[in-house]
Image (tube, rainbow, N blue to C red):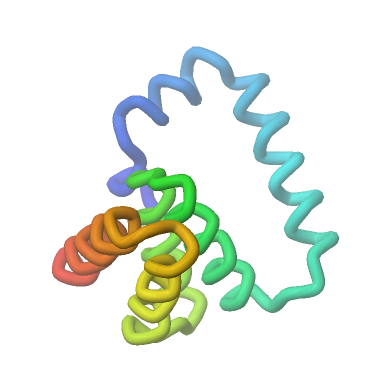
Length: 106
């Protein structure tokens, strides 16, 4: 992933609080190394969590990363559709919109 995808607010966070960003990165790596899922499944799970949290930036980021890990656009959409019954229709539709915008941006 290049800095082109990093929102300005996140870049500001990195520059203002590098020690916190490093600690968070270390925690993320530790958790990733501990989980039993392959990278593709891990990204789809993180996408589902981001959809449930209605976290637009995290949804967009995890869509890009899931596609990079070999998930198909149909699989990514299926995660969002699954959110209808657990997170609600508005969250699922918002996520579908963010997914399409990421897909269109390439």
